[in-house]
Every structure is written in C-alpha cells, then in structure tokens.
Image (cartoon, rainbow, N blue to C red; front, side, top):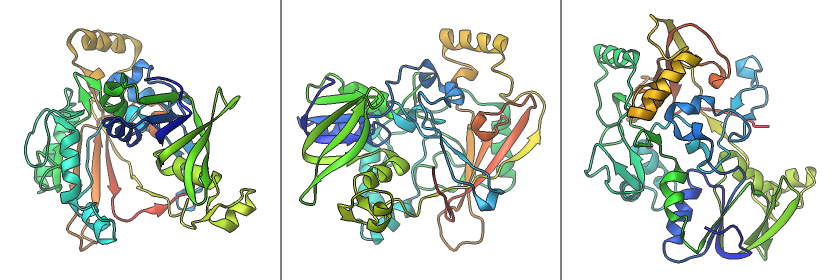
Length: 396
C-alpha cells in the first residue's frame, strides 16, 4: 500500500464506510486505486476498544460539525459528529449493525434506481458479512465484515427487552432478517472483542496490494472537470502546505459522506450555478440539487433514575483500571460494551406504511450532548427516533 500515485484508474475520496469497501472491491481485479482520507491513520487505541468510542470526540478523529441554529429546538446549534480517520464514522460509532428496511430499497428502485431493490442488494450484504450467529438466506459467513452478538449486556438492557414484550412488542432475534418489527438485542460490528470498522474489515486486508495506494491527512479541494467529465482531483497534504494533482483514467468516486461529498462538488463548480457564483466559485455544471434537502433523524431522550447498575461512573480511574485488566486478560466486561445494547422497531400508528416508522434505543447510561457532558446520576435512557418524517438541517 504505497503512498504515492499521480495517475490511477480510480480515485476514491474518503476512507469511510463506503470508500473502504469500494477500494477493496475495485483493487481486487488489478485496477489501480488511490484512496484519499482527510484524517489520519486509525492508530488511536480507543478506536479499537469497543467502549472507547465514548471518548472519540476530539478533532484528531472527528470532524465535529455543528448545525446552524435550529428554530424548532430553541435555536440551539446541534453537534454533528462525523469520523475523520481511516474507517470514517465506522471507527467512532457505537458499532450497531442495522440494515435499512426492505421497503427502503424497494422504494429507491421504484424511483428509477435500477439494481437497488432489496433482492438486488441482499447478495452484497451476504457477501460482506462474516456473521457469527447466522448463515442463511439473509446472512453470510466468511465475508470481510465481522458481525457478532454483544459480549456485555447491562441488566437495564435486559429489563428493557422484557418490558417491551409485556407491552405486546414481540421479541425479534434478527431485525436484519425477514422482519424488522420487534424488540431485540443489537448485533455489533466486532471481531474478537475489538471494533470491526470498514478500515479493519476491507482496507487492512488489501494493504499489501501493489495497485492500492492510500494517502492519509489528504484533503480533497477540487474535482478536475474537462469537457464535462471528471478526470482527476486536486488535494492538499501537510495542513494545506503541499498541493497535489492525480489523474483518474476511469472514475473519481466521492465517498466523503453526506456533508463532505456535496461540499467538494460545490467547491468544484458542480451545484446551483447562481449560488456558486455568489460564493465566488465558477460553475462547471449546473446541478441545483447538490447540497440541498439534507435531513437527519430527531431523537427524544426520556430518562428514568435507576439503582447504580448503569454504565455511569464506570470510567472512574479505579473502576476503569479494573475493567481494562479484565478486558486485556479475558476480553470481557464493560470495555466490550456498545452501551446502546438493545432497541426496538415499532409502528407509531400515524402512517399506513408496513415498515416500522419509530426506532427506540435503550441506553443504560446518562448521555448528554453526545457524551461531552458528564453526570454522576445512574439513569436508564429510552430514546425514540422517527424514521420516516425528518426535518431538514443546515450544517456549518
């Protein structure tokens, strides 16, 4: 995995959930691939210890975006974390393995996206999986990405799963299988009690291929467009001190996420022509939809004080030391926790759709502002999240 290339078949911008997979698959057949990642290598040990994600809020691994003031939320500016390291957000998230609902893919296909129906994408899910629980029509074994049961389950998570069954929500052993509706313990992307990110699953196994080049701390600045075709990319390294150009013989692939990919397109002159001119960017292709209609889910945090069995205060130095010793010796204990261990997919009753339109997360911990604020209380948090009706957000 060399660090230099000036002309390749494919340039992939962003080594996150999509970019690592694309780089692996395209380089399998001998095509030359250059991957550019704005962050650094995934060397931070907190990335690989499962519960370490609760501390991954710093700029070395996290873009730390913020929204503009939101009128519906008392004009608060909401923090919007995104991974900035090899693996992208799969290196800093809670490792929950959830696919979209069957109807999501069917809906995309009906909109004209041929090849995106559920029956079309399912073989790729199965190909990518190394599922430690299942090997059936919905799940694969022997793939790149390890999917496993959680090692640690807090008693509060088990109580949540039992409580929803008492409310007539059925237990679902596999929300990624035939039916999504029900309450469950989430599967996680872990291998041998360590985080399985897109980088560890797809990029690391391909690192010795001579046709795969990876450059970290490389910030893409412009897609080079000639005669209406993307033919290369400009990027900077050393915090912008050095400028580079790479030619793409086949394609430039943007996989920087829902914020950075449209940003790069607009910096390259691809977007609403009038808005680009007003911002001092010369348009090369008028595409008004770029950067528009960005949406995300709104969580509502419901809390209840509990007896001291939650994960709060378990990172106190004496307890953390004990947990680390347990983890290093036995690969067990709170260090293996995803924290958000259980959840449910239910119907609100306000929609005629067959697919669940509410997801409920259960956290046996008190989480405020993505964990940036600390509290000493022991709390169970139940977090409903609407799946089908979202509000547009603006990112700064």
